Image (tube, rainbow, N blue to C red; front, side, top):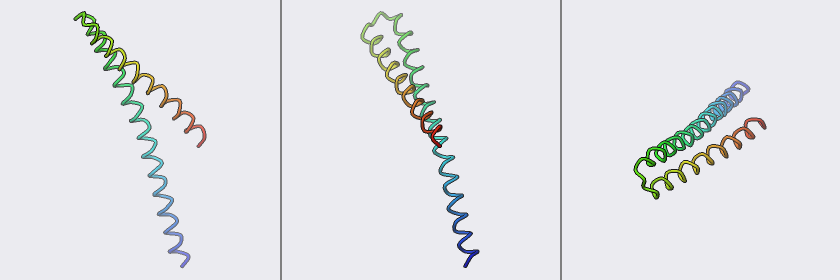
Length: 85
């Protein structure tokens, strides 16, 4: 009975270790995605300046700023979450 209980507890512990690892990776993937999208839109807004299409420039700049704010917010939240563990 003791061995079965020990194996069950070990399996549960291994499961939660794996879950923690996955969540840490997902946190990195999320922040990298927001940073990548921000850089993409900022690059598009710079490129659009050659076309003199003000609507395109404004929209691309707005999107870049939005993704940059999402990146900053996510990094702040993740730092808080990591420091509390």
